[in-house]
Length: 126
Image (tube, rainbow, N blue to C red; front, side, top):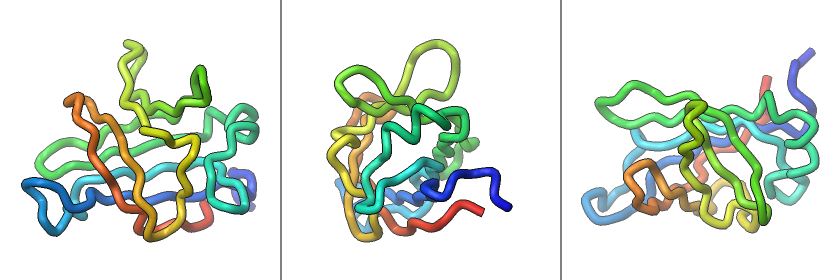
């Protein structure tokens, strides 16, 4: 039996086309473990109950993976934090986005730049 509630999904994001990456980049992205509603939105109520299980892995070429947590803050905003310093990457309008394959989401990364990522896979968490 899974240690995750049934609403949890493994969401895989890859960098979409942008300047310097005309074909996108499958080696730059995120793996997110988070609860989703039936229509693919992040589920804030389920997050609140199971926030310790909401994990994020950021991967980039030529860098160590960063492991962090998905946080839900004021105004319904979503953040990714990798340590206790309080610094975080911000999911741009994550509260409105649908996490379904083929959709696009944006993240203000640690370089201060907003990058767009394509949702390439969403599956049940085993």
